[in-house]
Length: 138
Image 1 (spheres, rainbow, N blue to C red):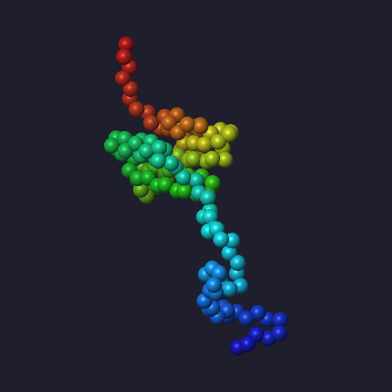
Image 2: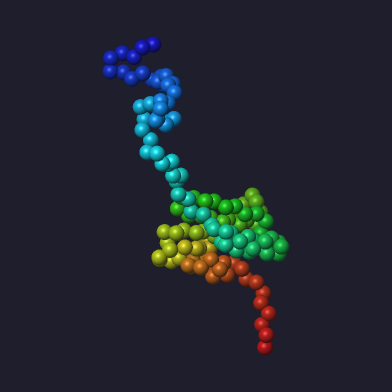
């Protein structure tokens, strides 16, 4: 079927191999030469993951936590911990860089959505849920 006047042909153009000096983008398309950057994601770095998994390991050994999930989103990174794998997370530890100059990058959020603690340092924020017993000397 041929398109009528004013109509666009829906079929793709026939393949033509790239000519000398052209990229594989196609004969009629120009590429900028630089590969397109993937969309930026917020992630936890190695030190932060080490601290999170250290706390997670202790809580699993105590029998309090059983599962975790990590989400790397465009605007924040989330480490969620679960008592059972089939329910909502007990806590979410979030890294939200846009809040760095205000309340702090890190926050601990309970299952009800209550912000338990927020701050600039991960270790201080995690103290809200890492209530280890400490020996007090007299």
